[in-house]
Image (tube, rainbow, N blue to C red):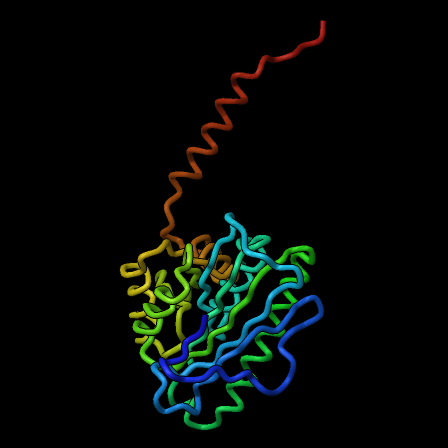
Length: 241
């Protein structure tokens, strides 16, 4: 699978090796230099040595922006979600201005991310056999998401959470407005289930803020103390004779 437009020949990605020990590189695609391409994309693909699809294999699409929310989403997918025989599609959006500067810098970033993904796979489960596809794509985020879902037909989409008041994102790092709109779009338009991963650091901050809030309700705390007092009263007393 790839994101080449009709009539565009596949181009094997040059540069540093993308396959770590225990992984085999597969055909990659590069349409950055093709003005007729339907999407400007850079696709890297590797498989664990001995990987084979089976009836139980699943496909997951993980949106991994370079911020904390995207990293947490990817880490969670690698550690807790992907199992032996599964395929993980990692999607990272590219701002058009970034692509206009130097294509090779984007390619190098993609190769480095692929290397990190393979290392984490080995770290979390060295015996797991998986297929990994990395998609760096420039373009309208909602259109890109729709096309990737149609292309790979994932069993679910994994996104991160960032921002205040529970604003969810993690699909593309296109600025505040783009992030907010993209998160809503994913949850309301995705034809497959969406898994939202919240960074632990943000969860801890929210919990600490609630504890420090003088207006925080104490009703639950009172219920806990009342329950403890009742249990103590029910305990049989012991006395020495």
